[in-house]
Length: 103
Image 1 (cartoon, rainbow, N blue to C red):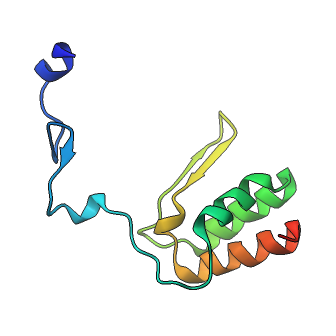
Image 2 (image 1 turned 30 degrees about the vertical axis):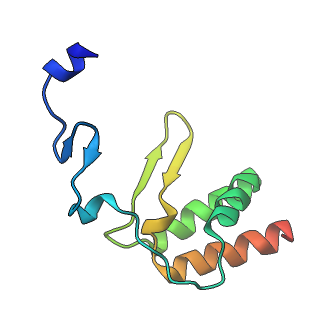
Image 3 (image 1 turned 60 degrees about the vertical axis):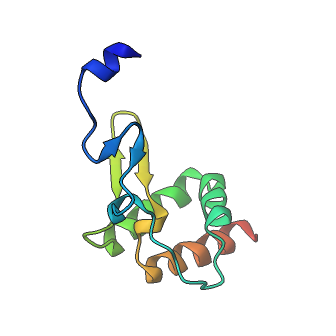
């Protein structure tokens, strides 16, 4: 543990805590649009491979500059932070997942 401390501080953190005024560390609060974000995340994980390819395409076509995505082709993984996606895309993903899973 001391080796980590000696290596220097992590920018924006003091003793493992984020600064109180650091707004960039807080997740965006999504207004209540009737979409359960945890359920959406669960639904996306349950989709078939073909459906996931469609989801990736939807995300790439509709994301904004603030959206966090990471496409790791070598590992066959696609990461997305749902809280950074625009409301219109969240609605599209929700409707698509409910349609495909009947959930």
